Image 1 (cartoon, rainbow, N blue to C red):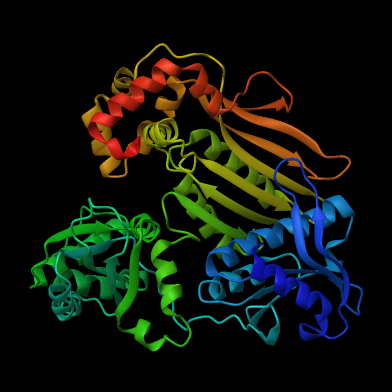
Image 2: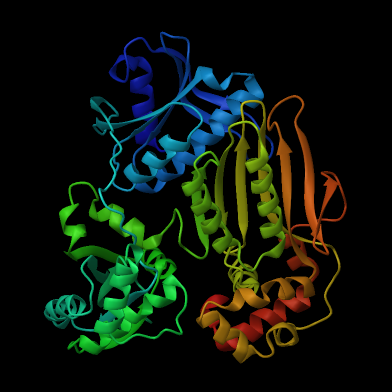
Length: 518
């Protein structure tokens, strides 16, 4: 918690009536201990006049506010498992100074969450004094819209040329059977001298195929150039971009493929992104769906991205649960062990006679060459895969923490031979990496280095009767191992014990992709 959040917390602790009349403070920064990362502290724990325990979390930016939904699930589960509080006696309240990106995911959270939840927009000065508290009413756009993964970027060296090109992109999209689309202005504000084209137009659309009846689809095919060999929805959407390029009369300096992970990476790299044009229903729903929410839709943090997924769901809501499984499976692609374990866990939840809630946070590039290069060369561990899920029912709380571990056997191979053995050649690997197909050989690459993706199961985390065991997939079977064992070692230990391989990887990758290792 930063200083302003602390000041807001302290002020509200003394003025809980601003949030709700009758709230009584139990403790601010109420600790929930756990030695395996599931712990933390509740900003404010209070009790209402009906005897409910009220978990109050305070956030002041979109970035951290979104993570608060996962924290609320965690704290609710820990109150039950470590303190013995019954589910029906718990409520949650989320307070935030901004709700741009939070409003839509909060709506879904409220729908599937196992305890009553409320959100409030707060106004606070620099001293943390809260002057206004307004309830947030989650809203739903009246018609389903979904940004396609198929996106395009037009880059320019000259700002004026970029701005002059905007009408041409809009006109081309309108000629391409697209009604609901967005064009972003993108401008590089970082300090990387290798970025040549520093201005651009980023184009995305909601596919007309999302709601198309057979007759409508046939009409679209008749009116546009169409490739029937593209057989799934994402690939079919490529047809619209192909038609867009046929219709466009814009001289950009470069044109690139866009996709959720790319626009997310651009934001992290220092690109400034703002909406230039909203059309169709995106123009009509501006009062419900802000520009910030649209940008988040492009990134697809809550489903549709290939490498990351953060969401909460329950099998009692079949439609959203099925989408939850589909989005998680996409991110776990290339990691057979985690995929197998996750499928089993979800199947068990579906068989449960109790209401079950699952809250997950997954990051999986399925690209161990890239991940290890950054880790060994620059000490950046953020590209390594990670998995965290909290499963809770009225009688049980279980946390699953995924990790990549080393099985302890040293490797006698250099980096070039390692890549060639699994990907045929270095060129083949980089082609796969470029087209997002490196996941196909990632498990084999990990096996060669004696690296494995395992899962730590923590039953009743933080409770006196907490139990821990490892889940390790061997030959397609899930084995359960004691928490204390000598089989698993950290990736850092792997690096330290295999220095020759480390040097060869840094040297070899440094010749082709030096920015990965330095």
